[in-house]
Image 1 (cartoon, rainbow, N blue to C red):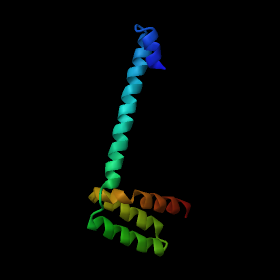
Image 2: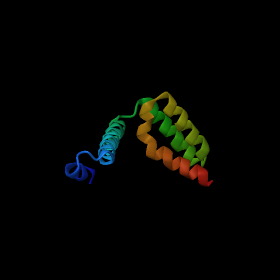
Image 3: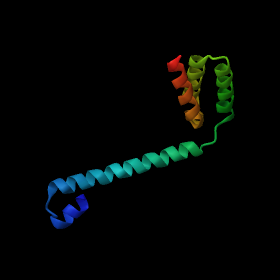
Image 4: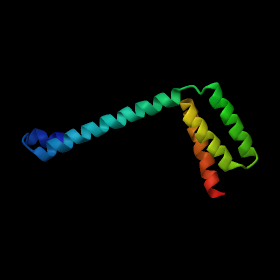
Length: 98
């Protein structure tokens, strides 16, 4: 819409500003999606896998808060733990319910 408005009236400063702002926001969103895709494609390290296994054991014992805290600490030490973000999110949700 802003592009059409600029074609009809190239001196419309509001349309120009909004068009440039929208263009910038779309590019930032695309960059964020690319970054998220790269993180998802990142293979978890052995450390990350070990921490997930320990967290799963804690979940089996219904220690959801401990499992969540363990994964948060592991995430601070190793970014590949982020491949388990869905798991971490589910643990957090259950811990908040309990």
